[in-house]
Length: 128
Figure 1 (cartoon, rainbow, N blue to C red):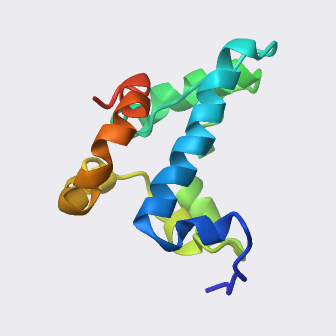
Figure 2 (tube, rainbow, N blue to C red):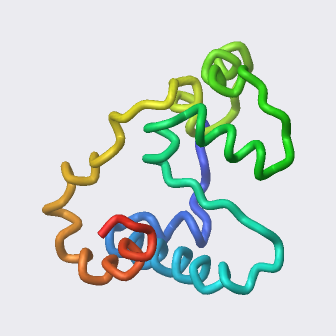
């Protein structure tokens, strides 16, 4: 596991309140910026990818102007054959899975005080 030193951005994630504030700041900025972007963009929800890995991957590659390659569906096998230096290396080598969908419900009681603040962005993203 890589040791990462705290920095001004990462230190915002030392508390749940700080995490929510940082998340709302970043996502609020992104949602404000979207209509002003001149270049085309494609948003892909994780659930879409999990439900239809091939279809979503094809749509994404087509958007990028990249020809379809069946190996995209086996990214995890390719990742396992490489030396990875990412803090999330243990996740990168796993196939796409539904296990994370709805996992936030396990933490609902901790998130409850922040749900009202999060509601606008959750609605904008199609989660509320």
